[in-house]
Length: 381
Image (cartoon, rainbow, N blue to C red):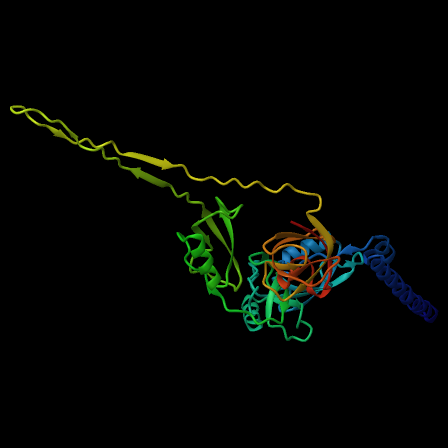
């Protein structure tokens, strides 16, 4: 009995380590089976981080699963899985990340916001910009004079353009200037005015215009049919409006009246004397209107120059050259990007050589950031 009891004790003592060893092997095997293989992950090329800002929870799960990425969440609703949308992400969209890596998402349990149109900030002051961007719940970055130390006074350009649909809490880029902004002014009522009257009214309001219609191409129009935006609309200082114009032809009429001397007949006594007066018919002569035909100057091979362009604080839409007369309309094309703008020569510069044009801050910013200072362009006219 004692020997039998001893054998039973030994069997139980040896059985416990074996069972524990088998359980450990089972756990290790399951971890190896379900854990992602680092070698398999390393065999895949990096993937680009998708843009999930503004996406709902369901959309985010679908996008991340399609791109084979994992994510960790932070913010309201992240601890119990009740968040409804993403408001920020790290890394930024388009960043290359490792296959099956884990990225960070900032989430919220609030209502999902729809895209909204970008506000028009060009011409506004720094205070106005801050107020509008806070109301729209948007962020912005700046470049240009005064951007580095926060002393800029006004906005001369923006990306994206006004009315472009953008995401809630997204960023806009503003090109700024040290120039003090001018208040907005109302478009004057010029419909029905002559050319001289319209030019005087728009000049008094510091508003530029582009004419469209009969006589606009050769500058022979003499009547305004309408204006866009409508009269009374508030626009930025030095904004450009569209005038619908036409050419009214004046007809001159000449009337000539001819009287013939009276015809007298003399008779002898006993007869009747009759005196008759005859008026010649009235003749009206209409002078045909004078027609002036303007022939377009044929294009020549030397109607362009290639060189460098710079910018200075000047009127938007206007520029300066040293080799073209005032009033010449230019097309300035950035040779690096292909972007082009149109400006009117209203100033002369002292530079010579390959310095082909000086642009306003606004139009230089439409081609390249102001901090570049100098760009290579082709100027056509």
